[in-house]
Length: 157
Picture 1 (cartoon, helix red, strand yellow):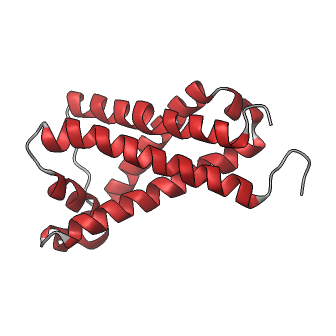
Picture 2 (cartoon, rainbow, N blue to C red; picture 1 turned 180 degrees about the vertical axis):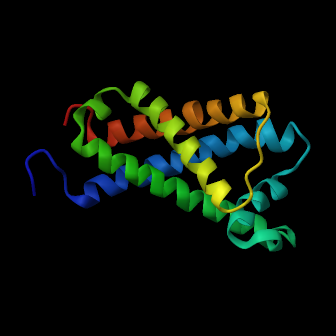
Picture 3 (cartoon, one colour; picture 1 turned 90 degrees about the horizontal axis):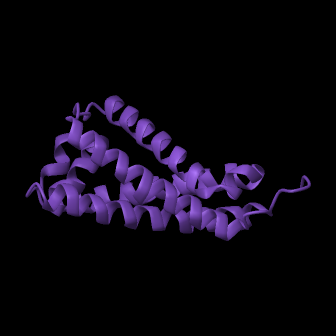
């Protein structure tokens, strides 16, 4: 083990916790600002997520919504663990969770839009939707992930 690095388990656990916090936070925000505000509903909200993996079959019953919620959780856990792996070897990332989290949120948003393009489910957003997605990914995902990881790894460790 190199000097300044932690055992993998000591990085994965804070990363997974951060991903879980980020998933719950961003989902709560998006359910209020998208699913409920636009009268879409929670089931179609998660069916859309699943449609990236299984196509139109995601909209045939509530199983697609459960799959979408599970996919979103797994992806959020992976992002949290990935962030923790970077943060454990980069003290500047841990020391500045507000800035690092904001940048991370933008990176996640852009990367997930590329995933939507690849899955052929991307919809060009209007200005308000783009701003809402940016707030969601920065304020309700990136920053919470960064703070949980910083706390879990220790800011100056």
